[in-house]
Image 1 (cartoon, rainbow, N blue to C red):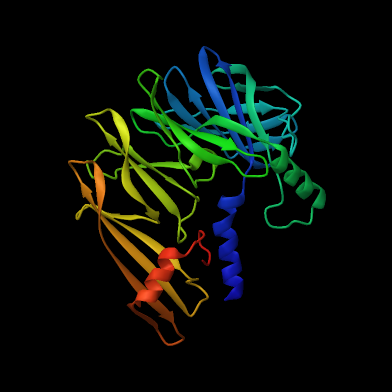
Image 2 (image 1 turned 135 degrees about the vertical axis):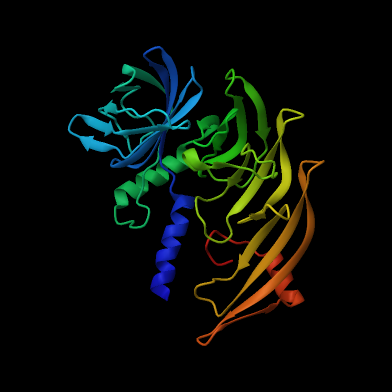
Length: 343
């Protein structure tokens, strides 16, 4: 059982700590102005999304094949799923744990748009052993980069978008700290103009392209709402905050729905947050605290309804669940929990 727990902890915790090499490039491919966003875990594992200003299309480049002359991308899938392309990136310098990589331009070619040369606008080149810290030199270099680097209000494009809007998270970093999301800029796909800025977000770590996810959370049949989460994981205790698009105001409003691993019931128009206290795989007993919310169509927000708490006991014969005691519920309310981990 301890081996299983260790493996699960690795799977669930990597997204929280795995800051990567992040870059932003701008320029033209053919007659198209583009923004390129790169996120790399290692020299052999990196992805790109880019924004085409002419069509307001977001395209994803993945499954790169490394050759002697550079990186070849065979898949280019945009959010309309109507374009596939082949792209080549020449002599990409990862500059692991360096303040500045040696090349100020991203040079390559596209089968569709031809040759391009894009200018680098931002870089943070963090690269360190995620699990095995035996590479002491690389580990120390990564620690120094974290210690000495700071920046504010850097926009980073998100892969998810609606039919009307695309999103860029605003990220900032203090010295000796990790990158955090402090806001969201929302842009119109019709004209590329900034529609709205959401500020003062707290507690949500930066996860490159996938911090923000799209869905229908006001049950109107349109997937034009979104949420942020603090981990790319389906584990317990993933913290989430939701925003609803209000067409009458042409803006996004905070939905009064922030909690853990939230699940929705479209028929009842409800949402349930589940906070888990204890390790469900190892501990003989753990607690789940459920909070229920009902969507208010007129206010475009959720109203808190009720909560209930269940205590689960694991035994060799069977699992037993019962209502929590008052002390168990209060202790779970106060507990600080991590994604897929013990409180």
